[in-house]
Length: 496
Image 1 (cartoon, rainbow, N blue to C red):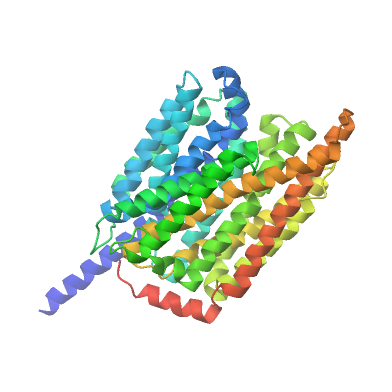
Image 2 (image 1 turned 45 degrees about the horizontal axis):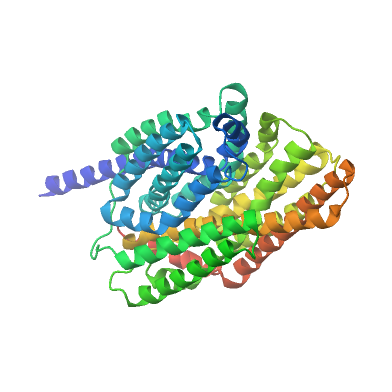
């Protein structure tokens, strides 16, 4: 009997060691997939002028290369999170990877604009399957407090620095190969990652009630798609146009009905307990506000480097390298101190640093020195965001039940996506209006250039306000260290 017990204990120990060894490999696989999702939101930006010329895309339609991706990604995230919960996160993760590979290949072979737009929409749809599955897989794989903090550190570093890395890779591929390789590059990476995921990852799915909330899915997807499209329309046509007002009004109606329905549904797509939890709900608000504020750091710096400082596509991408490095460093430090300090000081301090750095960026001029002024401000923003991203991701998902891991992950992604879309419309519109007011009727090239830079400054200042709001929400609504540690102990005893 003792020998039998000993054998069982030895078997359990070996299984535990095996799991500990493979879960870090699982994190690497998930991280690569997340990197691709983030990259594809920015890598095409650098390639857009070349693609527009090659496919004869009009200036009015070129925004669809970006919008088609963000629209489908933001619209299907909540549904994608629930599908992952019910069908199986590993299975949906792999399907998302393979679909992402196929749609990337389709985009690379595009013969005209509509074909490229369709491919980008497909990429966004499969990304909406992959993203919540990836984040929920981290949540259910890493249940020990310090290991989970490290895992979220890796995830946060990639989520924050991936966009800057995308600009660099996009610049290299566009300048030395072809804009098409900004899409083709996803194909081998997605396939290799899918094969690795099939071998390494463990399946995880929701138990109990797994019926789909079809009305909720229709209302949420339609509402989110209308919201993202309305924001995009505002950035192009203005806030007062009939199309912008119509789409935003439709989004408000659909999302209101969605919330009302979710309170009544027996199997809700988004259980209100997820959003109404004070700590988790606050993290979603922080994510939304930070998404708006962070937009300026990328959009306006991209144009500033290429239009004002006359950087090439590659040089502009490389100019973002300190941003990527700062986020990776900040996320690495945050993952080590998060279990000791809790999320509040890291989130509040991180967003405050990002606020200061963005205000610093607003001091740019026509002949600002990159190494003396721009690079230091990038580092301040990025290190701060590295601290904040790790705390934000972990706070949004700590204590979530296995049944809801996918949809909670999707809600975090959705808040970031909506924030980015709103930032695109709001900050770009304010910057454009400021530039027009500054220039007036002048045709003097120097006045025009100064007007453009003035618009960028207004964009940075506005972005800093939203980053400061994110810091204030972190201070006033996020749980204290004691509550967080208690919550962590509860999570450690949950069997996934």
